[in-house]
Image (cartoon, rainbow, N blue to C red; front, side):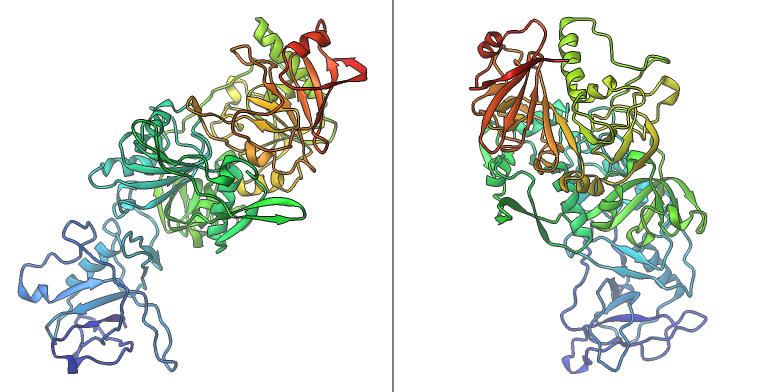
Amino acid sequence: MFQLCGINYDPVASNNRENTKHRVPIDREYHVHPDPILPHTRNPISLPYSGSDPLELIGASSPAENDVSAVLLLPPIVAPSEPQLPPILFFKHITSRNHDYTRQNITAIMSKLLRLRARPLTWGSSFTARQFSTTRPALAVRGGSKLFKDADAAVADIKSGSTLLSSGFGLCGVADTLIGALNRRGRDSLNSLTAVSNNAGVEGKGGLATLTSAGQVDRLILSYLGNNKVLEKKYLTGELAIELCPQGTLAERIRAAGAGIPAFFTPTAAHTLLQDGEIPVRLDKSGAVVEKGRKRETREFNGRTFLMETAIEGDVAIIRAWKADKEGNCVFRYATKAFGPIMAKAAKLTIVEAENIVEVGAIDPNDVDLPGIFVDRIVPSTAEKNIEVLKLREEGSDGPPKATNEAQERRNRIARRASKELKPGYYVNLGVGIPTLAVSFLPADSTVHIQSENGILGMGAYPTKDEVDPDIINAGKETVTLVPGASVFDSAESFGMIRGGHVDVSILGALQVSAVGDLANYMIPGKVFKGMGGAMDLVANPDNTKIVVATEHCAKDGSSKIKQQCTLPLTGARVVSTIITDLCVFEVDREQGTLALTELAPGVSVEEVRSKTDADFSVVDDLKQME
């Protein structure tokens, strides 16, 4: 029995029947039995097809063929006495009262509809196609094979204007096979995409940069541009819109969509430009603001300010997995897990490119990172893995880097002192740059646990040439290793640790830091527009996670980074407890809003510190020398 549901558009209104379900028996010769009139369906939600639509089902030339066209509908509400069974196909009767559905006719329609051109249809199988949007249709097949022969076939029906969730962190775990297929569609066929990702790729090396360079993306929602100068220029000249979102908030907005949560409150970004909607989303060619940011609703909980953030749901998610079985159960490898599982759950249609496609049962249930219920299409991953920053150590070169110039000596001095903040047994997060160097000054038997925001707990040293693995990187996209006892997890889990105050110490760099503990480290308006990454999340719980700033005392132009009041956009307000520079150490009383000099670097005087500091500070009686 093959169920057909449809709409009777008989011009004689009196012939239209009640809104009910109707089963049409098909015999072994695949002919519809007599009286194949399908019932009238009121107010259908149909999937429109245009002549240029690649999913057009009937290109009829004869009147007989013209009488029938297929449309996708959600099941109509049936009478209480009838079971609500999922329809397979809906057909629209235009004029004829006696259509003969042949095997060839139905096979052709179903093959095109379900994009099964590369796989034979098995009669007797049950297929259900779910419609999600009348303007950006995404077909999630239930009951049919999820395997597609290649990425081009899997993305052929993605529509212009879709919201695309793109997994990966930097170039690690990026679905480059699927991105390449989307790019081959061309700008005329696929454009005006809203792309959601942590990063926007690297020009010439992969990621979303492939699509932004081709003009297929109109809007990006991300946390960090990094060194993508081409993308930064496109934003500053008004070629595309960029919505900056803190990395942890981005992960939680995506996770919330998959969990059916429309909005939530977070302390991240309180008292920043993001709260007030003051980070422009779109500029014109002259740099004038065309679209302002979205002002956040705020709420006070336990004396703290929280911002309301809304969920981000995607029309399509493109994911790269290490292994997938034919039911869609997926396993991710190391840091590739960052955004993969949460994005797969937050999209109406999820396409996975897998490095290894295995039979059902080949993956132990305990090893499944993403259950098959969240996966709709699977293709082989054919793109090579890329490494954004290859960082190596030589065999037997454990320990801090040797200073070869004065600048490196200053950096080492700061990192050495910062390492003293990392006590045995602590769980710590280290920002990019000088903070990352701190771990190299720890003793070999250190029990400090290094957390990396891209989903690693137990990060080790840089690898030797033989240890390099493109799936193991740190927050700076550098290659690293894992220590025994390490664990890996997705970005929502990672920032739950951070935002929840489970991390003991976080060490960050700075552009400016104020006498009251305000931190600015992500933007110089008109000059630097890289994004905040995870920094706003890292400072969101300063009462439970000690925030340490490790930075050179002065900027390249000689101006002090230690200010009475920050002049650059804030990452967080009253969040910093300790400031470590190449000249000294300050302790901040965040409640009182005061700054105290507690340590001096060798050869540095209090007078020199005062001359290079644009903030008032006191000097403690027991002033110590920096170690």
